[in-house]
Amino acid sequence: MADMLVKLYDLKNDWSFVAEQEANDIIIRKPVGGEGRRVVNWVLEAFGESWASQANIAVSQLPMSCFVAIHDHSPVGFACYDATALGFFGPMGLGEAYRGKGAGKALLLACLLDMKLKGYGYAIIGGAGPSEFYRKTVGATEIPDSFPGIYRTTREELG
Image 1 (cartoon, rainbow, N blue to C red):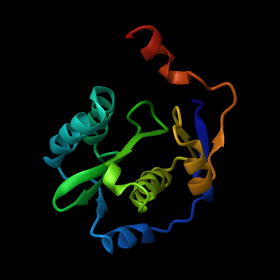
Image 2: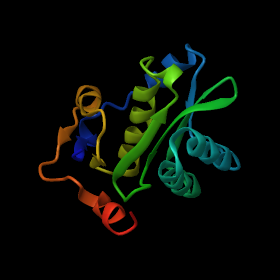
Image 3: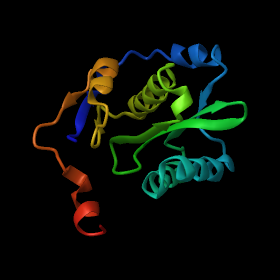
Image 4: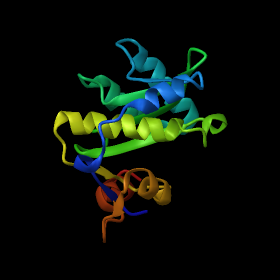
C-alpha cells in the first residue's frame, strides 16, 4: 500500500464531528494523563503489538498526539499521528461494531486538524489501507513510488 498526502491547509477548521459523535453516544477526545496506558492496552488487544507500540509513543508525548473514541466508558477506537515519524498520520483503528457510523472519520479529522493547528502544512498517511476512504474524506492523494516507504526498515531489518 502506498503512502498518501493530505493538504492540511485545505481542511476547514470545523470540529462539528465531535458533537455529531456525541449524539451517537461516542466521545471523541484525547486521553488524559493516566488513561494513556488503558488506551495502549486496548489497542494491543484489538490490533496487536505494532499498533500498540505506536499508540504508546503517541500517548507519551506532550501534548498527546492520539485521539480516542469512547462508548460506555470504554475505548472503541483510536487514531494517532507523529507516532511512526513526524508528519505521519496513523495508525487508526475502530472496533468492528462502530465502523460505518462516522467515528473513523471523526478520529481522522481530529488528528489532522490537530496537526494543522500545530503548524503542519501536510500530513502523510503511511501505507494507507482504505485509500478510497482517505481520498473521499480528506482529499488525500497517492504519493508515487512510496511503497514500502518508511516501513521498509521494519520489514527488512526487524522482520
